[in-house]
Image 1 (cartoon, rainbow, N blue to C red):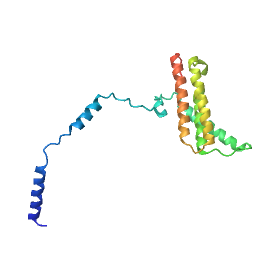
Image 2 (image 1 turned 45 degrees about the vertical axis):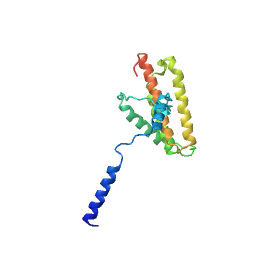
Image 3 (image 1 turned 90 degrees about the horizontal axis):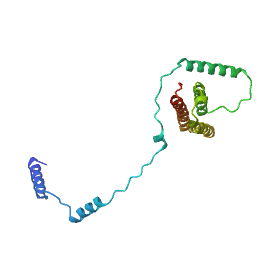
Image 4 (image 1 turned 90 degrees about the vertical axis):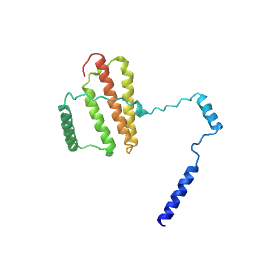
Length: 177
Protein backbone atom coordinates (compact mmCIF):
# COMPACT_ATOMS: atom_id res chain seq x y z
CA UNK A 1 0.00 0.00 0.00
CA UNK A 2 1.48 3.30 -1.00
CA UNK A 3 0.94 6.86 0.16
CA UNK A 4 -1.71 7.63 -2.49
CA UNK A 5 -3.88 4.67 -1.48
CA UNK A 6 -3.80 5.83 2.13
CA UNK A 7 -4.86 9.37 1.15
CA UNK A 8 -7.66 7.97 -1.02
CA UNK A 9 -8.92 5.86 1.94
CA UNK A 10 -8.80 8.91 4.24
CA UNK A 11 -10.75 11.02 1.72
CA UNK A 12 -13.38 8.31 1.35
CA UNK A 13 -13.69 7.95 5.13
CA UNK A 14 -13.99 11.71 5.59
CA UNK A 15 -16.69 11.81 2.88
CA UNK A 16 -18.67 9.04 4.57
CA UNK A 17 -18.39 10.81 7.92
CA UNK A 18 -19.72 14.04 6.41
CA UNK A 19 -22.72 12.14 5.05
CA UNK A 20 -23.77 10.96 8.52
CA UNK A 21 -26.63 12.94 10.08
CA UNK A 22 -25.45 15.68 12.42
CA UNK A 23 -27.80 14.60 15.16
CA UNK A 24 -29.97 11.58 15.90
CA UNK A 25 -33.34 12.32 17.40
CA UNK A 26 -35.25 9.47 19.03
CA UNK A 27 -38.70 8.80 17.66
CA UNK A 28 -41.82 10.10 19.38
CA UNK A 29 -42.57 6.60 20.69
CA UNK A 30 -39.32 6.58 22.65
CA UNK A 31 -40.12 9.98 24.21
CA UNK A 32 -43.62 8.78 25.14
CA UNK A 33 -42.19 5.70 26.85
CA UNK A 34 -39.71 7.84 28.81
CA UNK A 35 -42.49 10.23 29.89
CA UNK A 36 -44.68 7.31 31.00
CA UNK A 37 -41.81 5.85 33.08
CA UNK A 38 -41.24 9.21 34.76
CA UNK A 39 -44.91 9.42 35.73
CA UNK A 40 -44.97 6.03 37.46
CA UNK A 41 -44.25 6.03 41.19
CA UNK A 42 -40.95 4.47 42.09
CA UNK A 43 -41.04 1.11 43.80
CA UNK A 44 -39.04 0.98 47.02
CA UNK A 45 -35.83 -0.98 46.75
CA UNK A 46 -35.80 -3.83 49.27
CA UNK A 47 -32.98 -3.60 51.77
CA UNK A 48 -31.46 -6.83 53.00
CA UNK A 49 -29.82 -6.65 56.40
CA UNK A 50 -27.26 -9.34 57.05
CA UNK A 51 -26.03 -10.39 60.50
CA UNK A 52 -22.64 -8.85 59.78
CA UNK A 53 -24.33 -5.44 59.42
CA UNK A 54 -25.73 -5.78 62.92
CA UNK A 55 -22.35 -6.38 64.47
CA UNK A 56 -21.71 -3.64 67.04
CA UNK A 57 -18.71 -1.41 66.77
CA UNK A 58 -16.42 -2.23 69.63
CA UNK A 59 -14.27 0.51 71.00
CA UNK A 60 -11.11 -0.86 72.44
CA UNK A 61 -10.42 0.35 75.94
CA UNK A 62 -6.90 0.57 77.27
CA UNK A 63 -5.86 -2.44 79.26
CA UNK A 64 -6.04 -1.79 82.95
CA UNK A 65 -4.10 -4.82 84.09
CA UNK A 66 -1.40 -5.58 81.50
CA UNK A 67 0.19 -8.13 83.83
CA UNK A 68 -3.05 -10.16 83.84
CA UNK A 69 -2.32 -11.71 80.44
CA UNK A 70 1.15 -12.76 81.58
CA UNK A 71 -0.22 -14.22 84.80
CA UNK A 72 -2.91 -16.08 82.89
CA UNK A 73 -0.30 -17.51 80.52
CA UNK A 74 1.83 -18.63 83.45
CA UNK A 75 -1.14 -20.32 85.13
CA UNK A 76 -2.04 -22.06 81.87
CA UNK A 77 1.53 -23.27 81.44
CA UNK A 78 1.57 -24.56 85.02
CA UNK A 79 -1.76 -26.36 84.58
CA UNK A 80 -0.54 -27.85 81.31
CA UNK A 81 2.66 -29.09 82.89
CA UNK A 82 0.92 -30.56 85.92
CA UNK A 83 -1.73 -32.24 83.77
CA UNK A 84 1.03 -34.08 81.89
CA UNK A 85 2.17 -35.77 85.10
CA UNK A 86 -1.28 -36.72 86.39
CA UNK A 87 -2.48 -40.02 84.88
CA UNK A 88 -5.99 -39.75 83.53
CA UNK A 89 -8.30 -41.23 80.96
CA UNK A 90 -7.93 -38.78 78.15
CA UNK A 91 -10.66 -38.21 75.59
CA UNK A 92 -9.80 -37.82 71.93
CA UNK A 93 -7.55 -34.81 71.33
CA UNK A 94 -9.33 -31.59 70.52
CA UNK A 95 -9.15 -30.19 67.01
CA UNK A 96 -7.13 -27.01 66.50
CA UNK A 97 -10.41 -25.08 66.24
CA UNK A 98 -11.64 -26.55 69.52
CA UNK A 99 -8.33 -25.70 71.17
CA UNK A 100 -8.68 -22.10 69.99
CA UNK A 101 -12.28 -22.01 71.23
CA UNK A 102 -11.14 -23.38 74.61
CA UNK A 103 -8.43 -20.72 74.87
CA UNK A 104 -10.90 -18.00 73.89
CA UNK A 105 -13.40 -19.24 76.47
CA UNK A 106 -10.70 -19.27 79.12
CA UNK A 107 -9.72 -15.67 78.32
CA UNK A 108 -13.37 -14.64 78.39
CA UNK A 109 -13.88 -16.28 81.79
CA UNK A 110 -10.81 -14.49 83.16
CA UNK A 111 -12.12 -11.16 81.87
CA UNK A 112 -15.67 -11.70 83.12
CA UNK A 113 -14.33 -12.71 86.55
CA UNK A 114 -12.91 -9.20 86.99
CA UNK A 115 -16.39 -7.65 86.60
CA UNK A 116 -18.80 -7.65 89.56
CA UNK A 117 -21.74 -9.62 88.12
CA UNK A 118 -24.07 -8.94 91.04
CA UNK A 119 -24.12 -5.22 90.14
CA UNK A 120 -25.42 -5.73 86.59
CA UNK A 121 -28.79 -3.98 86.08
CA UNK A 122 -31.82 -6.29 86.03
CA UNK A 123 -32.97 -5.17 82.59
CA UNK A 124 -29.74 -6.50 81.03
CA UNK A 125 -29.94 -9.97 82.56
CA UNK A 126 -32.17 -11.52 79.82
CA UNK A 127 -29.83 -10.26 77.07
CA UNK A 128 -26.75 -11.46 78.97
CA UNK A 129 -28.37 -14.86 79.53
CA UNK A 130 -29.18 -15.08 75.80
CA UNK A 131 -25.55 -14.28 74.90
CA UNK A 132 -24.35 -16.97 77.33
CA UNK A 133 -26.73 -19.49 75.75
CA UNK A 134 -25.54 -18.49 72.29
CA UNK A 135 -21.91 -19.03 73.32
CA UNK A 136 -22.75 -22.54 74.60
CA UNK A 137 -24.55 -23.32 71.34
CA UNK A 138 -21.57 -22.11 69.30
CA UNK A 139 -19.22 -24.28 71.39
CA UNK A 140 -21.46 -27.29 70.66
CA UNK A 141 -21.43 -26.45 66.96
CA UNK A 142 -17.62 -26.28 67.03
CA UNK A 143 -17.52 -29.73 68.67
CA UNK A 144 -19.81 -31.11 65.95
CA UNK A 145 -18.08 -29.35 63.03
CA UNK A 146 -14.40 -28.91 63.98
CA UNK A 147 -13.55 -27.64 60.48
CA UNK A 148 -16.02 -24.70 60.52
CA UNK A 149 -13.55 -21.91 61.28
CA UNK A 150 -16.18 -19.17 60.95
CA UNK A 151 -17.70 -20.40 64.23
CA UNK A 152 -14.63 -19.19 66.11
CA UNK A 153 -15.31 -15.64 64.90
CA UNK A 154 -18.93 -15.98 65.99
CA UNK A 155 -17.82 -17.14 69.42
CA UNK A 156 -15.36 -14.25 69.71
CA UNK A 157 -18.03 -11.70 68.73
CA UNK A 158 -20.48 -13.22 71.20
CA UNK A 159 -17.98 -13.01 74.05
CA UNK A 160 -16.99 -9.46 73.08
CA UNK A 161 -20.62 -8.38 72.96
CA UNK A 162 -21.29 -10.01 76.34
CA UNK A 163 -18.34 -8.21 77.93
CA UNK A 164 -19.23 -4.88 76.31
CA UNK A 165 -22.88 -5.10 77.35
CA UNK A 166 -21.87 -5.95 80.92
CA UNK A 167 -19.45 -3.02 81.02
CA UNK A 168 -22.02 -0.63 79.59
CA UNK A 169 -24.55 -1.75 82.16
CA UNK A 170 -22.10 -1.16 84.98
CA UNK A 171 -21.03 2.20 83.54
CA UNK A 172 -24.70 3.22 83.32
CA UNK A 173 -25.14 2.23 86.94
CA UNK A 174 -22.15 4.38 87.90
CA UNK A 175 -19.87 1.45 88.68
CA UNK A 176 -16.35 1.05 87.32
CA UNK A 177 -15.20 -2.06 85.50
